[in-house]
Length: 84
Image 1 (cartoon, helix red, strand yellow):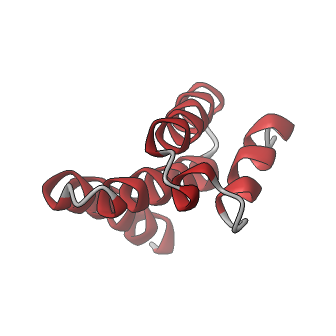
Image 2: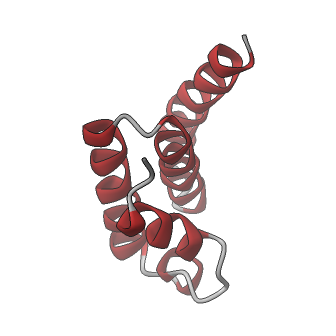
């Protein structure tokens, strides 16, 4: 079952009003970190993947390319696992 809060957080990632796109990287990171925590707690694989993408994007925007690479590689591994 998808968590409504997680769906809201994932949707906020796609909005141009997203805090990270406005330069508030701490808020952007916090939203995605919370989404990742909720996704892991509920076993929501799609939510976990979305949160990892969001965290990776925030890290990239902060020019933390090593962290971005780690997060996005984890996301890719989940996508490959789910593809079978």
